[in-house]
Image (cartoon, rainbow, N blue to C red; front, side):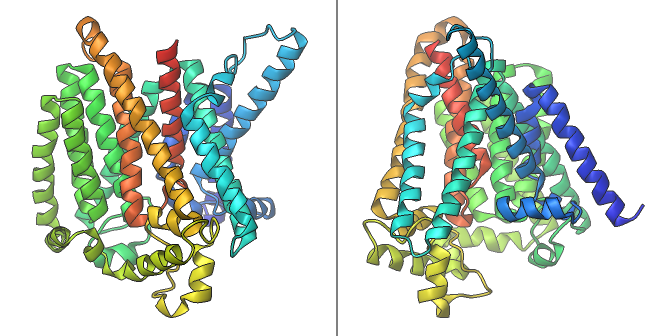
Length: 453
């Protein structure tokens, strides 16, 4: 079978998969989560006119983008169908997926996210690249709808734990891919970039994003083990954690290692359990194994003592330019998506290796949206950590009745995962642009809905 035939087969199987999850929507979120790591899939689709046309609107065609759009389409179809039925029955119909969809509009997290996106769209008025500001705003609005779809599906199916389990299983499977690359030195994709550096990237376009996904998977596996509290759960969980930890060290991602350390220490404070100590010991063992396979990791570990900024000297010019943009446009910024335009227009002499996009998410926000944008990001974190505190207070009330409440564990997982994405985004970018962030936003709102009920 030729390459073109294989690509057509991939397209057909993708369409069949979409039809399947549309028929059984409970599995939409797991399918989407399993598609997130598959950046490599952009090389698997055939060049068809309608597919290329779709790519001109949404960017590179990948499994994640296709399943995201399918999920959003399902959300909108259900929303319209529900409204029509309500009108037909005089507003009494409550039988659809969105029987209580008004509740989401009143959540503070929703208000903060919409406010941020609205300000980003408004920045097109003064932006250095108004068209790019509008395009970037539209892309973020699409991701906002992804968060809505995730919220409503979890409320309907009570599938909050399915999200955590999907991240755990997907991370473990992709950890195996990474270990295969470490042992054999054979890469599935982008081997010309990462083989020379002695790092692994699995099916991801970037090793740092791979590390981010693995850290989220480690959190998911740990929470799952704590919730199960049985021998077999601990056994399989420990095996999964060892796979994830070895792969994490193999990514060579310093931001990933910092994220893992932060997440595990914070988790120890919030949910003190012996499983976390096992992971810390396992992490040290995984580091020893990885260094034995690739001794050059010792150099990257040693660089961490100098701080992340010093350890990433190759990106200092982006930080320098971003800070200069903020200093000269502190109030409103240069407009959403305007960073690259500014680099080409005012800082062309600084650009190295054709890299002109910022890799520091918070500095990107400061440069593009000014202090107002930074305050918007701050508001999002105030809200999610307020949710953590509220869940903590309810946990103390319920602890004597049911041990560790499930909602508390899921809230910890969600808040720490969002924080991991944010910390990782300071080394590789992609904070609001990461679909996982919006899945977690939907999960947090769904957990609040459960607590209110």
